[in-house]
Amino acid sequence: MSILDVKIINDYIRTITDGWEQGWHERNGGNLTYRMTKDEVAACRPYFTEGGAWVEMGVSAAHLGGEYFLTTGSGKFFRNVCLDPVHNIGIVEINPEGNAWRIVWGLEGGARPTSEFPSHFMNHAVRVKATNGACRVIYHAHPANIIAMTYTTPLTAKAFTRALWQSATECPVVFPGGVGVVPWMVPGGADIALATSKEMETYEAAVWAHHGLFCSGPDLDITFGLMHTIEKAAEIYNLVLATGGGKILATISDENLRAIAKEFGVTLREEFLDN
Image (cartoon, rainbow, N blue to C red):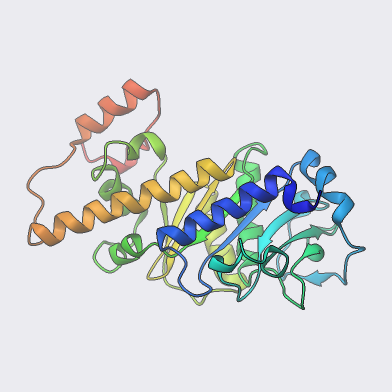
């Protein structure tokens, strides 16, 4: 037995591999963090080290003090995770104050958690509160079609949500609350972490203009599925604009969207509907 036989570690690696195979993670692009359950921590604890020095994050969330997170490594390539997990992913412990981390497994050879860890941590903090503790996953990727939309669509939550809802029937069911939008900012610091977490107080997904997409969810499958659904809808939207010369001749109406919501028992964000 090794830690690589623990189910959550296998599921985490599979999600990373799936994202690579979708083409969402060029070079060292993207990152994935998962807030572990107590049982998962217990299953992995026999393989933990003593832990290194605490590293301050520049952001804090006291209600996440003492939590453990699976994280991808800074500068690491998603394509290499399944080949060499211990050098490309790791588990970090959060200190009791909720403002610093230390590595307890993996990230060997001097590796560190993803440079976007402060953004992930703050998004976990707000999504845990927004979902009464249900949210466990924050996933950031670079899907080409949603990035392309940020060059042609007004950078507002309403504009993006309507375009996506109307591009695929499943969208209002999968994300009835819509998606947020963060204007372009330099990645990796506290500013973009705070801006993204502000959007994630309301939305379970946020588009980073000209950069990528942040998604959250209660488990790896649902979060990956949210990312996949948004990106596929963006692909359809871009194809429609390209083949139609920028004109949309037919679409899913607001009446249709309300009918979908009623049939599937979800509540749409009404302010994003026009009539």
